[in-house]
Image (cartoon, rainbow, N blue to C red; front, top):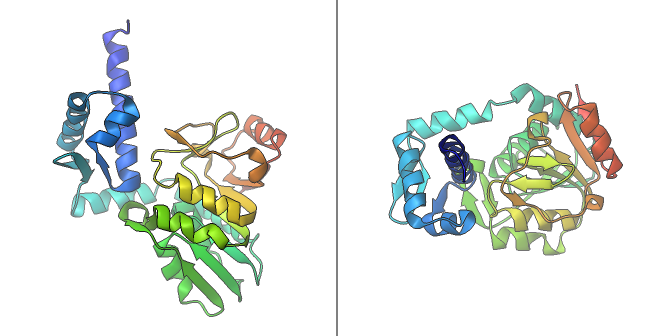
Length: 263
């Protein structure tokens, strides 16, 4: 039997994971959480009540959403500033792998957005993306053709998701995919706090000839709740920053993934 301190640690870890899920999707239901954590509704409601008391979420009948208004806006802006320099360096390096005339898929996320900030050298490009902010950023550039997937809009990630977004990629053929991830581990692969985008990311990978995973070093050797089913042979490059250890580089390259380190 676990000690009281261990039980408290488990409870805090669970609440952190619930908050990750809400930040990813904007909302969760009690039913979804009871199935995910295999706990009673009473326990989950207690967790949501605590997160509401701490100012992170707003509860409603049957679930919870991110808080609204200025508090939520400030939290989102704060989150987007995390590892900003590393993400910018990754974006700069990743952009060098895009050539005029390419057809490229951009996943949503702060790191893929950083790639879009370094596209001044491109004069002709076709972009397929789930990221509304990337479509807006690149859509006004002459020579860049944008295809924005359909689906359900997710405010926290400024992206589209769901079956319609995944189905969009059914007949798409692209040279390159720049894929974001919450966590990446040589042993357990890519993982995410929510399962809602798993089908979309899988569909993206099937549509691309070359897959670049872009992730700052804080995400390496970490594991989140939901795994992305894929073989390492489907991932060709990992672009990260200099915080990655040599041991991790060796582990990924032993799996056939070429690691590119942005300085």
